[in-house]
Amino acid sequence: MRTRVARGDDEFVEFVRNSATRLQHAAFLLTSDRHQAEDAAQTALAKTYAAWSRVRRKDAYAYARQVLVNHVIDGWRRPIRENATEDLPEQPSDLDVAGAVVQRKWLLDALRTLTDRERAVVVLRHFFDLKESDVAGELGVSVGTVKSTNSRALTKLRITAEDGSELIGGLGR
Amino acid sequence: MTDLETLRSALREQPAEGFAEPDLGAIMTKGRRIRRRRRLATGAGGVAATLATVLVIVGAVALKGSSSDQPLPPAASAPAPPPSASIPAPAPVSPTLTEAASDRPFGEAIPLGVEAGGGRELVLCAFAIDEPQMPDVRFGLQVAYRTQAGEYDALLASNEFKGSDRSFGFHAVDGGDVIRGTFVPVFGYFAGPAARITSTVRGKPVEAKAIPWSEDPSIVIFWFDGTQVESAGVLTPLVAYDARGQRLTK
Image (cartoon, rainbow over all chains, first blue to last red):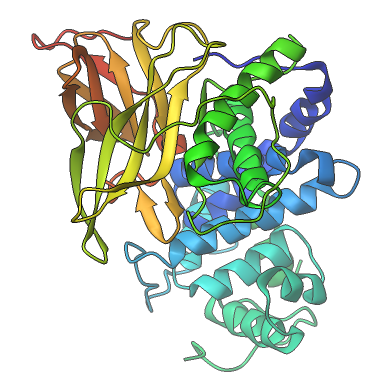
């Protein structure tokens, strides 16, 4: 099976080159699975291409991001999804010279302790840097829900709030 | 640095092992297929079920004839709209269509072991194509409901539209979608002496159920269990083996 690339597709090819890695990375944070992440990004890009004439002059990246997150969330709704665990792994010490590798393992293990919605909020809010109102729009929930979900997720991750104070609420359940 | 900044920094740190390059060809092929289905489901939603398949086929040919720069998918396919649809819509393709495809099977229908409610079962079967613009394409595949009375109602049809429908290799691979409330598994056919069809999904091997076509045993019709393969896009790649276990495809 062959696919030819038409001249009018050049912009999309460029878009894929510029956005694929970031979308794959986001999907990896949402799924903790490299293959799933690559599949999800591939699907999001295909759907973006399907709507390319409509979104190319707007914010194609935002469209792809939204499709990606929705696609992953749809996957979570299937019964094969494993439940989040209550056990938060020990956070590595700041002085740990193993640095990035340990930190990354901790991060992925820690993300697994979050519920699906908490995880989506953390990725949209702190990886994509979206405003709370935009996160709410993408997830179809209220801003208040985003605030409380974000707060609960950070508490679970034992992350202090932006003003440096410890968030309260234990594991938030 | 606050904990939150540390978290953000950790989130943005690239994994040590990079991601696979996106498969641009597969992305664009899938994107075109989605776009085509959307058009059929919305703008041309009134096209009768028996007409939809042929329209898409002719559309693909018309597109091919109009501009060689236009990208084309490897197979033409379309979810068949409900038969109750009655509002006529502008045909997306040539008006020279003279003969509609039939939901009736060409050869024996293969039950997929799925009850679709209302006494219907899901079957996979070939259907005949007689289209002057595609002289070397005489059949396609469709997943259809079969009623207890033996009537067929196509959900998704797919066929080769370039070259020959019997050229060596995989053809008309499609499915992996919920259409009219029913999950249509990934299906296709292989032209050649295939005894096994396999692939991987997220690194895990999967094997299709494969049955020679009743009308021509050199054509092997296959489909994947929906619990193992949710869409054609996750297969990487399809591989065919002959009866001796020899690989037939790269």
